[in-house]
Amino acid sequence: MLPNAEFSFEGHPNNTTLEHLQALYGVGFTRVSYGIQDFDLKVQEAIHRIQPLERVREATENARNVGYTSINFDLIYGLPYQTLETITDTFEKVAELRPDRIAFYSYAHVPSLFPAQRVFEAHLPQEAEKRALYETGKELLVDMGYEEIGMDHFALAEDPLFLAKKEGRLHRNFMGYTTSPATMLIGLGNSSISDIGYAYAQNEKDIDVYKADIHQGKFPLIKGHIQNEADQEVKKLILSIICNEQFAWEPDFLLNLSPNVISQLEEMRGEGLLTYDTAGIQVSAMGKTFIRNICAMFDYRMQEKTKSFSFSKSI
Image 1 (cartoon, one colour):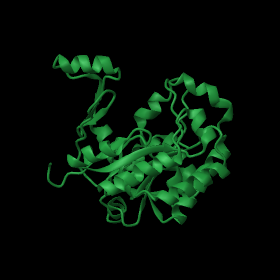
Image 2: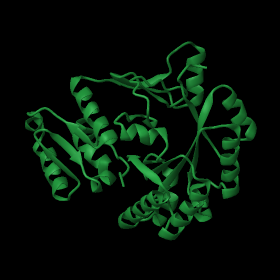
Image 3: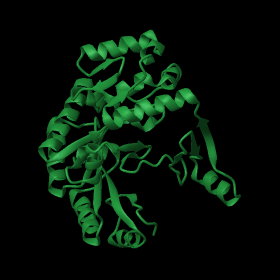
């Protein structure tokens, strides 16, 4: 085992057995994340992800008994057939199991990429309903003793992730928030993405092609991007905002922004989501919910892509 290293894996409550947990713990894994999504049976049937509370309870208790020091649940709001009543029931069940960390994601509806999503399109909560689901879930998490770490993530007050947030040491990579400030992330497996600090690369998505490339001694990459100086500056700004809700920029920074971005900044300031001046930007408590939108304003490459690509809604 590597000194000072932490290893985690994503398990499935329906098939992560005690033996799996013991084997991985034996080689150094101490964290496990379970994709729960929602506990309501009707919602589970709609998304083809049926996993009873009893199975999740067993997987959670097994991990704790083996010695895992951190358990994470992934939950989603905006799913078909979700209501305030069903999501409240889901969080009551989560409270019973009390994982150390919770990721509370927005359901990404992109039927152009995932045609199967069209089947339940008519049963999705609409914008106001979806926002209410998020606000209800967030309020319940806070009542349960979880602290908001940042974009979609919550942790108990004694968790290292919250302590890193409190001390200004929080970092974020493709896998989410982390206490490690490492600038290199190596993606292993098909479709995974690597970040080496100044460039990104994604592995082949097709598992058979990926394995064939590996066996031939080839890098199984299908696309990548080397960042220029402007990319690096945007990356630094966005990481600061999503980790610390603030960023100090150079006095002439605003002069280089497009009129469209200045207009968006003014609109968000008027709505109480942020404050800004020549010294920098500060996200308000209310603005944390819209932190994706705030970051997206500064991502000039994403704004170029929206002309020809469809993205899921941030909330």
